[in-house]
Image (tube, rainbow, N blue to C red; front, side, top):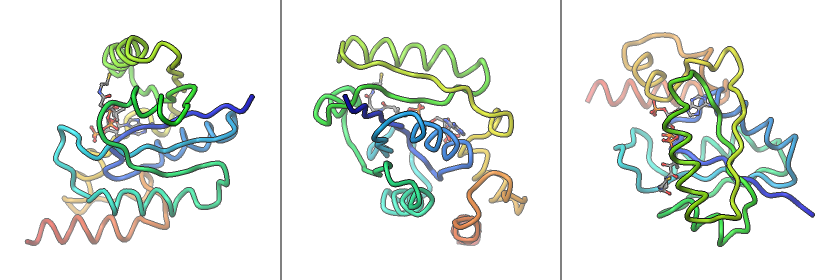
Length: 164
Ligand code: COA
């Protein structure tokens, strides 16, 4: 039976760490949905259309990846789309407690739904979108943190925000 998984997140913006998890998921499962949360408690730097546009661009060569936005409960969205499992990257140990809490809650809300954790690769261990935004906003080099094809747009966008 075909297996569908979802890589959910705010992707504000997508980093090489996210892309690593998406690619590894695409190698393991038939269909990978990259789900961008619309209404997060965080105020995003990039609009939902920008975040989706970046993700579509960096995954365009991976045929079994679909990029969507979703609103509301992830467990409910997974039910509607017949998703078998949530795939998340685990970086430092500090991720664990929060991820464990989310995995248990999602399982209570949708008992069919599994959560699978992939260990982040060593380059992404300490990477996060807010770190990328902070380094870029101070004029630092983010070329090791974000996909090459969207690098300049992220830098321009963040420096525009800084200058206005
Ligand atoms: N590489 C690099 N960075 C990564 C990463 C990876 N593999 N995985 C996560 N991150 C970073 C993100 O960049 C983000 O960094 P930031 O805080 O600096 O912006 C941080 O880890 C947290 O990730 P984020 O995607 O913002 O959110 P989350 O992991 O807390 O969860 C959802 C996102 C969408 C899964 C969650 O909010 C959700 O399910 N929301 C829907 C509502 C719901 O169902 N709530 C009940 C949940 S139990």
